Length: 139
Image 1 (cartoon, rainbow, N blue to C red):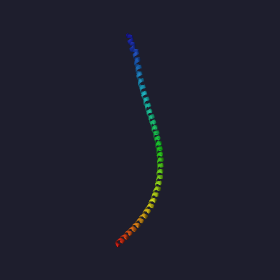
Image 2 (tube, one colour; image 1 turned 180 degrees about the horizontal axis):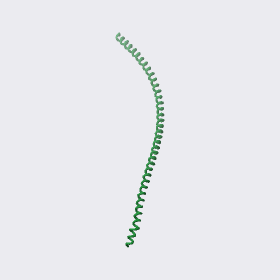
Image 3 (cartoon, one colour; image 1 turned 60 degrees about the horizontal axis):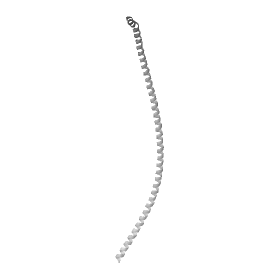
Image 4 (cartoon, one colour; image 1 turned 30 degrees about the vertical axis):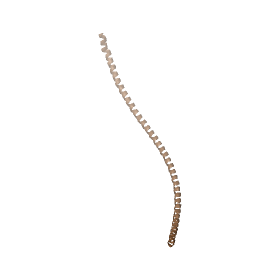
């Protein structure tokens, strides 16, 4: 039994210690390599995400600009059409107003003539009344 213990301490234990030490070094090196690999891939992923985000934002802004330009052109056309309609309506309104002004001038002339006739007839009636009064006074 002592022989086995001595064999274990003399041959097996040093070999296990050397293998354990080598395994520890391997784990340390592989851990550093894995961390470096993760760090490099992480940085590459961040750069890819930044570039993808930049492209997406640029596309979005281009589409929004396009859409805004289309809407502005459409709105401009509608405004132009409405201005044309308003202009034609104003022309029609001006025509109606000129007709109304002509008719009003004609009516004013007729009214002035009627007023003159009424004054003449009132003057005639007033003279006749005065004549009647004089005749009554004479009688």
